Length: 538
Image (tube, rainbow, N blue to C red; front, side):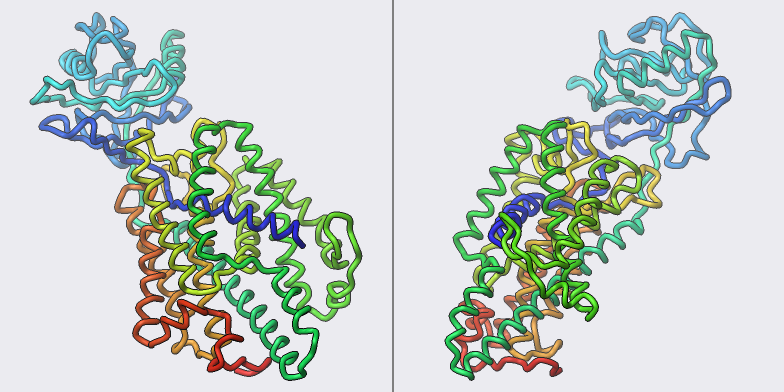
């Protein structure tokens, strides 16, 4: 049991380090290159479908310049134009070849981007594609001394490998045609709806499981108190051995440890480091899936004997036969996901393992009172804002966003995320939410239901319904902000914490329960006015 507890505590710190919601950036802002007349376009990603000798080929992705013609948002409205090589290749002087509405392909360098665009427009090109000298994309801006830029053609940069491929086709006398358009994301994608339901449903299930366990333990303790049994001390020890209660110091320490861990991930981000995270995620996922399956199967009388019979296993202590029976399946499930995690449907396995892990963590790790919950969520609130927004000032990029995406690692992001593919988004990608955005507020929500049950509060007079509603609204506002920011990653706790914690504190103050919630919380045996709810009663 101690091994399992250590695993859960470690996974809480690891998984909760990532508090992040994203759909992927399509529009990019840049404070270093401010807008001015003629140079005021957003940096948008551009789709460049290609046709080789009339046959559809690869679709490349480029980035539009700060200047030039605004691109169409729909493919059917985008012109299909012939591609021509610039001569000279850098397009810094008048092209030798005659152009009449072609899209010209030029190399970066030797003159400014605006100069290339002006020369291409004067030569009769309908647009210009500029090949970067690296595989990454680069934001093309106006020069500092250019105050009134007038360019009437679209200007798009392509990565080096895409440009080299197109050059090879043209060199072999193939006819190459391209379209340029920048589709917009839908206001709401159904993936966000399902992700919202997953997050809310996960906390809902975990809260009821946690409250049921707490009530059963309280009823058993109440019986021992009435019987005057000497087994009370032993019962306390057994109960506490399976639960990790967070205190104020550990809540503050969490932010420090999580920050250190995030910095380590940022500095060491690589393919092999992602592999280590995958292994750790699989270990936690196996533990979570196993715990959830055993708890679920134990509800059926056919499995109860196996769940109540134990065998001693080295390093793990007493383990039920039911646990031994489901363990191979859980291990096999995690291994299969790890091996095939790059296939298109692997997100399903990742979400199953992730949800099982989160539910188990919320069952094992608990907030004992509102004071600890307030400290934990307040620290997490500041942590999320700092590493998403403020870290840009020191690291020139958002540390949280870089780590969550798995940039520079060759992988499609870290595994400590719930994600669903964006089904009606022309850019594809995933809507994601970090484990921390579920676990951290989920600790407070689960505490509210335990308190309601043990204090015999009904749904309306209690705190759980309002805390759960506040979390749902906070997450909803996160997705609204995400769409308003054109897909830019948002610190979800920036919206969730004020809704959830603010609602709890306000209700507690209005009802006169704040002192009890703040100082004792669920420690009902020290509070004589709280009566335990008998098993089976409403």
